Length: 303
Image 1 (cartoon, rainbow, N blue to C red):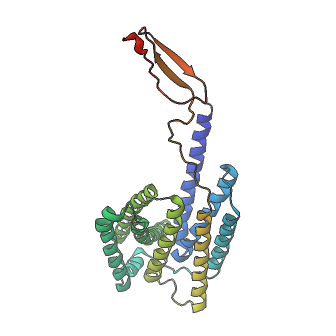
Image 2: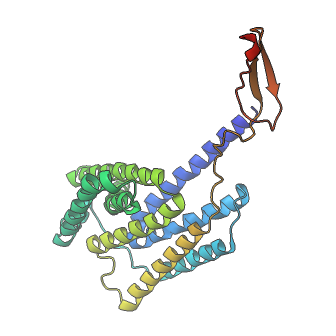
């Protein structure tokens, strides 16, 4: 019983870390382009693997160490060749980027694909095809990032003295962000319920990051003015991070299955014996005995 307060304190402690991490991620989207912030999310996988190795005694395999190394190398390459953040002075400027023909075409296309996946594919193939649920939350996730970035910039400008709450575009971005986040989390949880986490995580990371980079490149024109070598180097860095993430997840030790064998030892156990004279007697078995409810009736009593 003494462990309960300790466990509760640990849950609260790590929950606070998660909240702080999400706030930091939100702030990062304000000051850096999404094509830089999103791929660097793989660094959280490295931290999780290292903490699990030391705190949860989950052995980090040699190939897992190689995966961590690849993630670090790829992240460094992405940082070195990332584009500069575009200066935006109002939500109205972001709105003009959002209603440009190229991004409207992108939004319409992914909404059509999402509706097709939700209405047709999910009921039929969602439980057997891993790409259905992950595809939905990855595609919607790209709009989540664009909306969250717009909201973050609006908050920053408001804190600097230029109130962005008076513009209706701010509230449109907020509505889109909330709707996309709810949908994204719903289908991500469905994917985790139906498929192995070690398989879901790298696929989700690859698709979510790819769609986010594409959406950001279309809306904010992140690669405008960059040389071909810089763009190629950043894509190579992303592929390196993706490879490291896949290796790290594939080399994780599988969770121990919960035994459902009725003959496996359970303790303590209680067996009831009904004797011939109609009296019952309770016997507590020792550890290691089989789990059975035994009814012994002397047949000669009824002869």
